[in-house]
Length: 517
Ligand SMILES: Cc1cc2nc3c(=O)[nH]c(=O)nc-3n(C[C@H](O)[C@H](O)[C@H](O)COP(=O)(O)OP(=O)(O)OC[C@H]3O[C@@H](n4cnc5c(N)ncnc54)[C@H](O)[C@@H]3O)c2cc1C
Image (tube, rainbow, N blue to C red; front, top):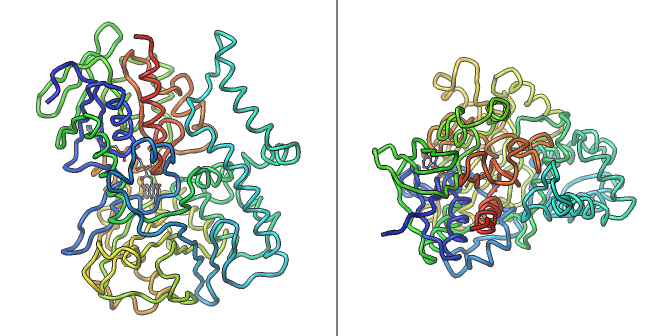
């Protein structure tokens, strides 16, 4: 039990746990307050049907910060990967699936020209993505420089771009704000390939392949600096959070579950305490919130503590989620059209063309769900027998576009939406319906309710150029320090954004530790 006034971390999502672990390792008394009954937030595993467990929200890692992984000794704290370098398999109903991993094209039918263009394209994008990746572990530059030294972070970013070399630098600057479809049209003719690549640009966003900024979101998705590629943690994503919680506890942090924070108390412009739903008041002069920026600043702190312009900017932070989760307990392994049996456990993509994705996005623009949704499927039980009874399987599907702000609401739309998902799956995996033992649907509204993420948004708020880097979550508060002294943001709504990375938690902890005492 902590005796001295603790540093409080609100939320035991993976970023909150990372921040807690770093602060505790630096000798601070850390208290993590988590609303839910378990740690992990959107990086968790739960049982959705007797004997069947699944990654509750996020289901594959590709961005986990290798520095966090090493610093916090996650392997020693129990993190094991059931599979690394998971391949992407672009499904098709009438032809062989395209299979690729990084710049390697492993199977599928493509023209000679597309085949030749694939590796150079992916490698170029990887070079561009690594420019973003290098920013993950840094505090974003300030737009206003009071001292020359304040210009250094911006200059360093400029140097990273310059280091690409003249040709790549020009191309980086040309494409970074473009729509992914325009770039793909310049490179390839295959709809099948363009659909698969476009999917990486739009997953988790309220953007379509013809929207500006989707090259940026594609690069974010590929900006992981680790060597595991896309990976499946053994025991689901909850295993990542369990290892982080173990690291935090090991360093001395206390994690309290079922402890919902309802507001922050401010005195003389500085944080003084956090107030819990239970009525408890915890005195604290340093508070890190891993909740999204709107919840942190408008609900917990209150707009009265922000100047009017800043409150407006936070209010306008775009955070309408478009991705739902569907979990299916299966009595056997499904077979997918055009997929070799050894590829069923890989990352299966349903997005047969960029046009398909664009039409699917149209529905979301007008607050409807798409009749032809995009899906990212994982059957983790192919590699991880801990998630289901022997011989049986779990299918985890991210289904997009399923907008948070659905016209008419989600309650009456649940059954038809689930039926639609099954119909689409049946097209790609004939007979799958006969294997279904149970299903679970989590719409963005459910995600908001269960995990407290405004809009059920993947990144706690859209990740596009106007809400990224020194503009994340909004300009003026992009360096983790919030406008009230002692309050910091450490979740996906801060730089570098969402995905199970841990970088926001690590950077925020570093800012806290660097404060003059
Ligand atoms: C459908 C979907 C699929 C995704 N798939 C992937 C994927 O495959 N791979 C990937 O890398 N990323 C994926 N993501 C993104 C990723 O899950 C998130 O960006 C990331 O988990 C956010 O982590 P966080 O720690 O910043 O916040 P969160 O995980 O949101 O954690 C916040 C924590 O705060 C707690 N909390 C909320 N309110 C309160 C309160 N008032 N008091 C106390 N505690 C509170 C919550 O319970 C939660 O534990 C996906 C997201 C979605 C929506």
